Length: 109
Image (cartoon, rainbow, N blue to C red; front, side, top):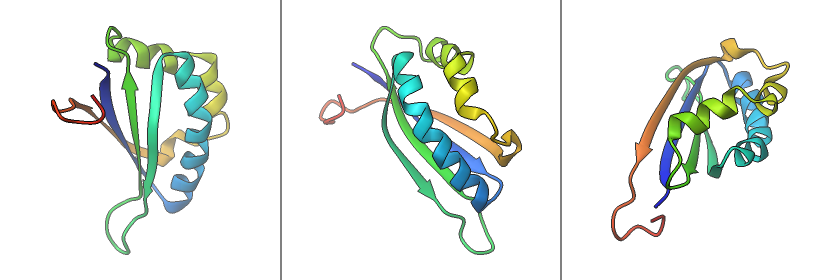
């Protein structure tokens, strides 16, 4: 069974969200090289006068893979560095990672 992870990135501004959405389109093939599959990427714009905008990504790792090991390998890769070139990392103000375990009846199992 694959191990799923929901990654939530909180951005400083709507412009940061737009820029990071473009970065994520570059991440997908690079992550695949590191055995991280992307199942979907969503944006949540900031509500007027409240929360910051967010980008959600649902990814999975193969059964035998260690999640942290695969992620660290990608973050240290030339693909990741190339993806992030020119992006202001200060636009990302928070990252939350949640491991999701599919239920016995889940189609994602």
